[in-house]
Length: 241
Picture (cartoon, rainbow, N blue to C red):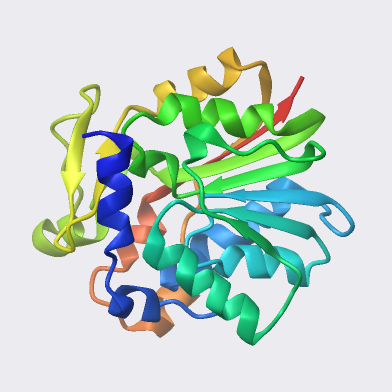
């Protein structure tokens, strides 16, 4: 699949899928991603931050409310339209650009930080996109990205079905289609880690967050204890050397 084909699929994302998001995203983002992304980014007040693959803009708005000067880049039609509409309804000073991440526009200044959350796994030709993110940073700037943990994909539904997790392919690279027509792509975690190192970054942390048992119990979601026992996400923090 080409990047253009993947973008076209995401451009047709149904409104119902976006409606599942509130100001903090969906359940996993609220409870497993957001706090760790912010922690790894460090203080953002007064800093220029690029939200690469900003989607419908929920994390851009979180960053703006923390005082960041935020630029969002999103290639998919449905998602960029939703983010711009939300900015128009409740302005936070976020500038959105519709661009392929592999071909970022020339910005006036480098960014203090770039966040790329749950995006690289959805890009067929992901290496140029990661390179663009790193190139947009000033020296010493922070690059934080997250992916579904390649060792624990489809964790919740597999746990529901079997009462434990099963995995039979890890080192291969392959497409993971969804019922809504969009796809993610499986790659071993080492592919992402080694690539960011090769781009001249220093890894500062690999975070594998687990769900708070109290949150799991309150949720009443069948099989959610899988998120307590195993990490469904991997978050990598790095600095450009």
